[in-house]
Image (cartoon, rainbow, N blue to C red; front, side, top):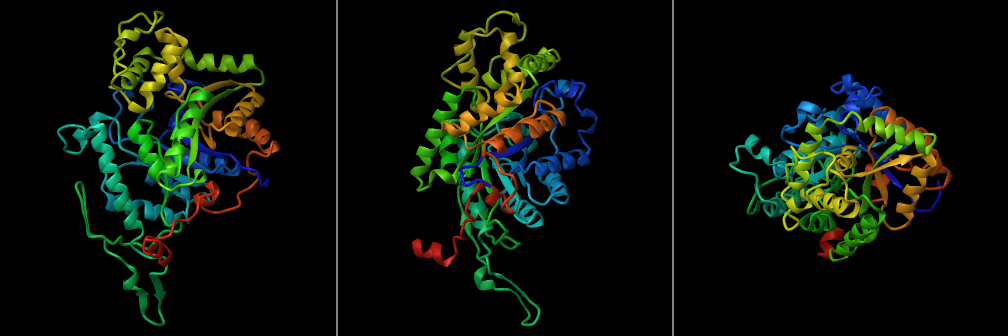
Length: 447
């Protein structure tokens, strides 16, 4: 493999595919949405192409637009455990909320996944934006954005110490001496904070990676600060290379304040490619998907992003810009500015706007030949806009297959992506060091 910097590529698996109408497309395998073998096969295909990881999103509430799209959620750690059994190298990233889980339970779940996969687990850390989730957990209302991030910071402190509570050599497992564990190397936390009281230690030994890879996706000011402090990979959405460069530069700058080097955080925008043998063919393919859009779904999704309901407005009329409150993101904070930027830059009709967002919920949608897709990936990668990408196929499995078969070989020929795995853990794929336990002699000496 080339010694030059290499792309990170993840397969972001969304039921049916990432275009909102993917499940209606003739090439989609919509009937297999709850068939675990379908997801196992997708992971095996991604592993055969030497992708770094597969990734599942999640949320603890039913989407209010499920009438028109395959948008329910299965619990991702369970699903990834089944996938781990039929794969050997590919990383396994699951989303879990710091707002609606408890650190001890989640620490056990991810520790189990990392052990059974021999070091391939990653945690996409979210604070949950869906307000309806609160009522599923006995809360009178959804905590504020700031409160959720305050809880998340304490959560990360607690869960990180739980994963460190067994030193690497605490597990002795020696039948001759009769010693199973060196209890002098197993540590209680006795944590008492604003949000949590956790004694510890964890009831399972330290995991192969030390702890799962920390992934984060928030783009708000709180989200960026949180990511710069904790994240080892950041999933992000951008429509232009200039926007992606600005985000990339800002995160790497903020990371320095926490004594973190730029290579300790991988920034991974989403890309959802429509691929054809010619530009006209790729454009026709995208048009086929957009023709399947149901406005009832699209307008609900837009309302969730900007906090404004445009139902009843002329779809072929201009977006009523004056209704969008730029002073306060009442919708999904990580998408609000992105949508406003599209409206200000392109002056789309409402129909054009929802078509832009239908492809991947605000992530970068591009139509073109394999060479065009590869050229754009290379431009972003070499131009300081990305360390790699979350590949978000418009439909599954065909949208991934064409990317793997036609784009990946071009990236390999240019020396941008691996020919084969050189490591076995997700940390090794990403080029990240295994973190030392806070109880190790080296860390204690620094402290």
